[in-house]
Image (cartoon, rainbow, N blue to C red; front, side, top):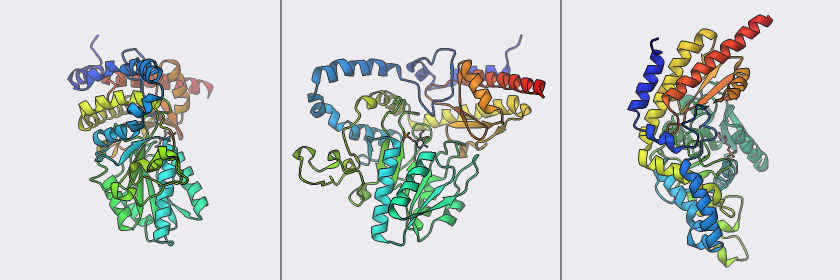
Length: 419
Ligand SMILES: Cc1ncc(COP(=O)(O)O)c(C=O)c1O
């Protein structure tokens, strides 16, 4: 029997892949399980297992409270700078890790609107799109209520995202802040970040970027694109583990101007002076509130080292090749069964995942999980396939899409039988 040409292609791509050797550095990647959710929770790096154990025994167990002075106090800023350098092209001193994305979104959005309203009380609107990630929408809704502001919604199609024209129509003299996801969590639409930033600035607004689905999958140039503020997850393409702390970027010249609302001792000029009142340090540390979650930072350092070594351009190139392969298989195998693409077809407009639409996808996802093929499901009818460039192989994509075809055929046959 001749080999399926798609499988032959996948094997050729794996052999030619300069990043293929990273795959074995992730727990479980060599098994038959197909993991299509690295954009939601990345696999653990093998070296993190040893790192966490060593930390518990030697660093925490051996150094005890001395660990804070010896290294832990500086970790949020040091890892932040590494994320700045390797993932989002931000010069040192502008990126820090600490709380969850949700909490950092709140702190930065609230700091931004406070500063804008103080400068110009007419700026009483926050612009956000209807398909932004729920937490982003809920956070700005809460802030709008706290501050007596208004939300201006940009209505977007769930298989695409915010365009420059839409933002140009929504932003104006009443806009305090614009909140946008660089890569849309549902469709993977990759916004034109430099252009949207320029439009927000021309309107006199600040812009807060959600980089959760970008960091480690697409290139970001925070400084060159003129970002004001950004947040991003570390448990997706950075493999930090469930609940690992998020990062925040605040442009250098805004740091002294913005005051965040959760005034904790870790953000003060001299935290061990234990002074009578809150006096924020004038640098990026002022956006931190309390004790840093050190254990949650260990695993991501292992992936960071791999990204530093491989470089974002190589990761993005592989990510594009993986999503393009997934789309071509979906067109050949799934489109005849009624599946449509709910992500941009043009790789230039697409991040690191692909969403395939069919009204049976909820059922298909549940059955795939039982067969150790793990995508996720997002309404309406979206099978979301996240392809992490360090840990996913082309053959894995082939195996996963072949299983999807089999399961979808099964579901459709059962349905036809019931009709
Ligand atoms: C785009 C986006 N923003 C925000 C969040 C929320 O992050 P967290 O639950 O860490 O606060 C997520 C989580 O998946 C996300 O995908």
